[in-house]
Amino acid sequence: MQIFDAHCDLLYKLWLDPSIDVYSGAGVQSSLQQLFDHSAKIQCFAVFIPDYLPQEEKLPAVLKQISLFHSCILQRFPSIKHITSKKEAENLAEGEIGALLTLEGCGPLGNSVNLAETLYRLGVRSFNLTWNYANYFADGALETRNGGLSELGCRLVDSFNEMKVWTDLSHLSEQSFWDVLERAEYPVASHSNAYKLCPHPRNLNDSQLKALMEKDGAIGVTFVPQFTAGGKPVLHDLLHHVDYICSLGGSMHLGFGSDFDGIEETITGLESYKGYDSLIQELLKRYPESLVERFLYSNFADRLPE
Ligand SMILES: [Zn+2]
Image (cartoon, rainbow, N blue to C red; front, side, top):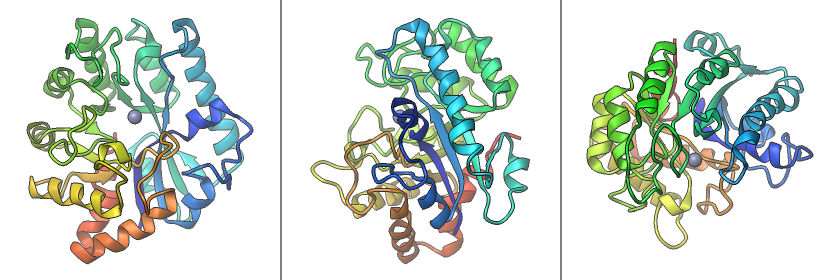
């Protein structure tokens, strides 16, 4: 069964330490060998820049991560193809993996909407407006004032619509979520779980989940233990999120965004990419194969930018 994973932070890990072994490194959760051996078809690679970096160093760091994407992944592994459209995804040959670039937080753009187009030219096809905190465009999930989208943020979402790329709602404050959802034509939430089961500000409440489905967005259930359950979550705790989102009508919207290499603690049974094998086995006990195939691949792949 083919896997579409809507979020990993391998580029960030590589940027922190360019000497890591992306193919088979022991500490690499989404190592390329695991992707090849465990049915990966499309992997989203997020460019993530930590907030502690001074503003003037953020955009160069974005460019550096994109450069590492080319030098350490695409050039060394020719069967990993940089894809920028649904057509390119459909044209992947057997044994090839499509790699989609995303930007996790638009803070590095400063106050420039135009820079988003430059990143589009470099192949970025999905943008989270924020990480957890505020920037010129919007407030993130951990901003307690819960501000929404700024005027500049409205223009940025408009530019995503014009470029026909995904606007990613994961990481937004609740108010930003509603402002952005109203405006975004291609909304997704790449890595968030159900707030009802695990009340963390990074998760989405029932109204948010339902509204995202109504706008035909995809939702990536994520393997972050803190967004899954209290204590030390196990695979079954994650399955509850799948069941719950399906109970709200999400079976044609649900996918996965692991957040591998962006997390230190992991769900027991989902320590790295190969954990998808057990997840698929468990899903097949509960859902028809055609639906499991949708969860693992088509619900995101069918919504890729044209
Ligand atoms: Zn994230």
